Image (cartoon, rainbow, N blue to C red; front, side, top):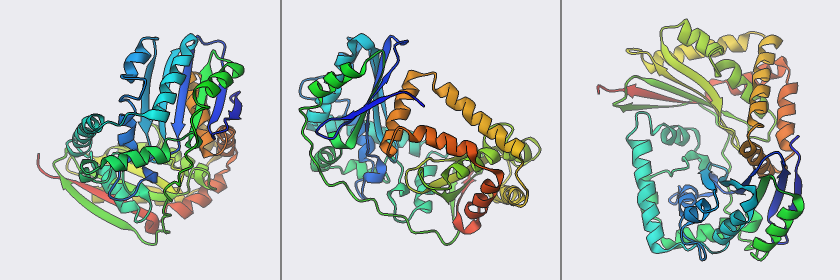
Length: 413
């Protein structure tokens, strides 16, 4: 388990310290428990939009990046359906600068009309370039919308419609900030050449005075159980047909999540996977195919995605995929193949732990799920799963009435 110290400020901010005296650097990671799942229809994409706004000015910091660069630091951020995460890497001797910068924008982000309009243009351009003007770029708009009918997972983090971004009002932005960017909705993890007492002092100094807003968070609408297969066909000027088939699966902390993750690995992770061997190397239908899980807090998706060889239809691809899935369901899973996948997972975990940034983020992320201890719990649960459990969950998840299929059809370029 990653060593850490944990404490809470009176305003609700959770603080975790990961001491690593072998590093001269420090990582300051501030996670807010808000993502696109905390939005409402008509105002989607606000979590991602706000990630951009946070790099504008705050009351005492005219230019965030400039102040950080002065002390040899760098920063970045990302938004997911479940969280928004900000991280700073800088020399450990300058760690207080990170406290100053992040506390100032948590407490008093400027949110001027100029900043809002500048970032609106940036995000609209990102939407067009990444999602509208790229081959297959809009797939997650279609696949999420097909797979979910009620839950806010039905739109991607960039937003459901371009018009949502275009129509944000200043009040929408301000309300989102007041509701979600609060101490009790955040987790701070500091790692590197720091000490618990040092971080306790700095946390109290810079974040302690920020009062808890205790706003009522937007309730997440649960998704009803899917009862029938859903299919959608898209036609676009793309190089070849593509197939996307997504099955509903348990959420991150639910029973069956680890099994679903292993199912996706067995079938479609890496060059030695079943689908790669059968449908790419030995087959003549797919140019590429893989499988993965989304890792969502609420019930998510186990996704198969593949690009077809030239002249091959996505319908032919789905038939071939279904034959391999049925073969997988009908055979016993060997302990040897299962252990190989588990070993790959262990190696990946060991590799991730080398980087201080990865360790700090994992502590923050699993704390957001309930406890940093869940990092090891998830790994241990996965390592203990038997082949018969994989088979049992495969028969529950990989059924047609639980699937959502996109046939992405190629029009002449």
